[in-house]
Length: 83
Image (cartoon, rainbow, N blue to C red):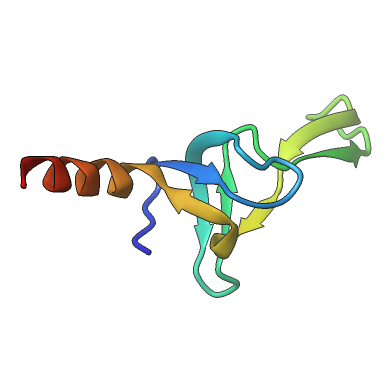
């Protein structure tokens, strides 16, 4: 599957099954992808000079086998429709 930063994908398994989002980050070594507003986790931060600290929500990685490329399926449907 061809994955690039910024394309639309759909989650096909896991707790966020059925949700769609945009790819923010790709880790090719671990075969994982970070998707906007998918697989949200709570992170506890210590206060520093720059940061106030507290609990923040951020995206976590999802394995690339658990997502489907929506842009690729749109292209395939157009080709099938022309035949």
